[in-house]
Image (cartoon, rainbow, N blue to C red; front, side, top):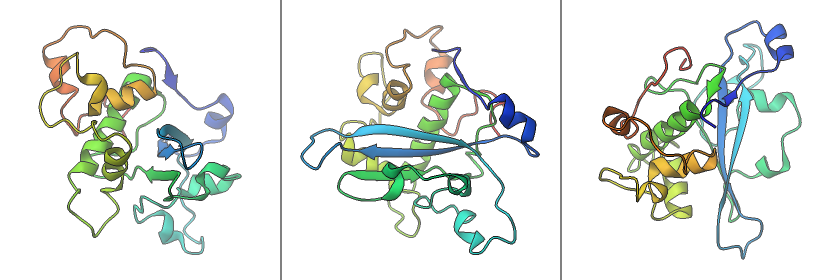
Length: 201
């Protein structure tokens, strides 16, 4: 799936009057309260600028990781996203930061996996900061996948239980053999990392 891309529709490109960037919401859900395992859902939408005259516009511009982006309000919000933090549903809205801007579209699946990994690593840097919601993703991952936090270098045998393997499995890259090795293996563990400047904001 390395050649697969997330890209806007022809209709979306035709009506867009701004650069097309991807907004990403990472959600962990359980089908019911007694289910032992969490499932990962990725919600992807094209970012839309917040109108300056929109009431309470600051809700969508202050990098609140529990507030759905403005673009999600332009249609019906999926039922799964009605609760941002419960016993069976938790989601994290990846914010735009200096180190991690929104990806530009189209974006390849490998680069999307790198973006998700970088978002998780950035969240981990805020793990002791209770003043913001930036640590929420790291706490969600640690709760749902207790063995996913690996502080040392990952090798091919333990990648599936590590940070890199978690999101690669979500979008179908976890079982593909690596090509090249060397710096490629090292760079996959370094964040923030921009693999392609044309795709990254």
